[in-house]
Image 1: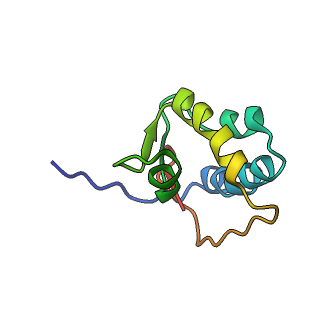
Image 2 (image 1 turned 90 degrees about the vertical axis):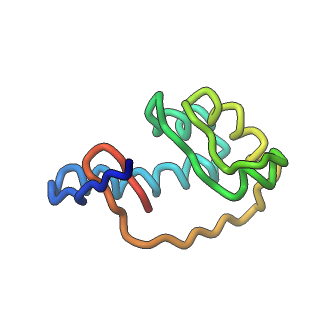
Length: 99
């Protein structure tokens, strides 16, 4: 069954969500795994084509902070000196964030 959530209009939730990506990007650029991992909820899901590529996996998703923490050293190993990101607005329902 598919369920749809409405984006939040709560300004505090939106502001908090908007701060996550810059903080994550700064942590990744600094190779600061502890700060990067702390930004994810314990039950977070990370989806990225990099997961398939770097892990040679069939799926591009990791579930849980522990899996994300194990993946980050591999990301750091393959990370170019200059990181570039291209993002649109943040969408959140107050619990789940998509960018």
